[in-house]
Image 1 (cartoon, rainbow, N blue to C red):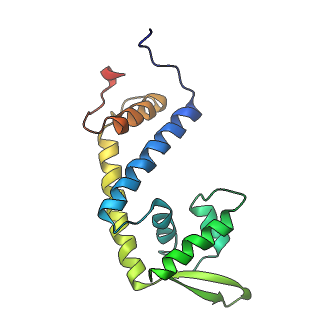
Image 2: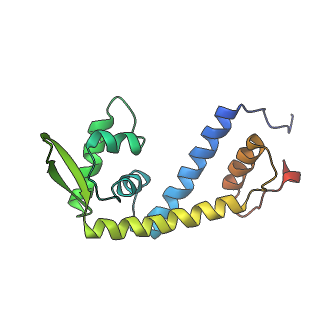
Image 3: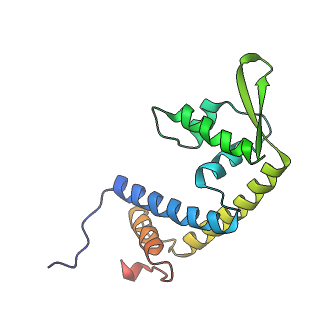
Length: 157
């Protein structure tokens, strides 16, 4: 039986790294940001500018799956409203639309989650060597996320 890893294309490497990074972030957010999910964190981050956003804009930014992205965004926002993290307000330029805004409590949760995101990103980037090509860096990043205690070096590739 061969011990050689299968060759991966760039899209696979990106997908693998994203999948593992989201899993690691989800675990950290659950533990350190009052059970905040990745989707909730994305929504809170998107609302940080105070401008108010529509469900469609939130769905796009939060990378919610089509074709039910807006319905999924509505359910996500319903949960955030119930937790007093966001509120809905009619769009002053189009009364048919509703804009979502952060509450003070939502802003506090957003800051808490942003700190977790920053730490997870620092930890992930620390596992990489800067002189590697992109494909090798993505592969090393994914390898590091599968083995969190190991620091991946170029020689390990």
